[in-house]
Length: 156
Image (cartoon, rainbow, N blue to C red; front, side):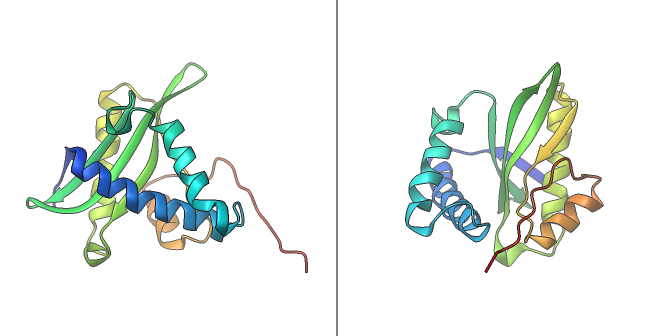
């Protein structure tokens, strides 16, 4: 199986942004970080900060993941500096629901890692919501380790 990463065009980016904003807002609400009535606004503000020039924002790479010429998902990686180290930070990995459980997420991540190495990055990082157990299992299988952990407990 071979995934190809193809740069998003403007129409691809618009679809990506709508989907990613909605999922990010919902994730932050579910994590208890944002109230539902403010989540859409706050998600849009975060995206404006991260992508001030949209899909052409420097040090951000936005791709469609293709398998056999068919779009199966999306990947967004930002190049960042952590002290003297260059890191690649995965901001979004998405596989279409109908395409899941076929190895596309794994192959998309590996393709992204390969590109990050070519850019001279020393490390890959990502954030995953604690309740996203499937994603966490995949990342752990690929060698990702917990670097920081925030835990919560409701107090009735």
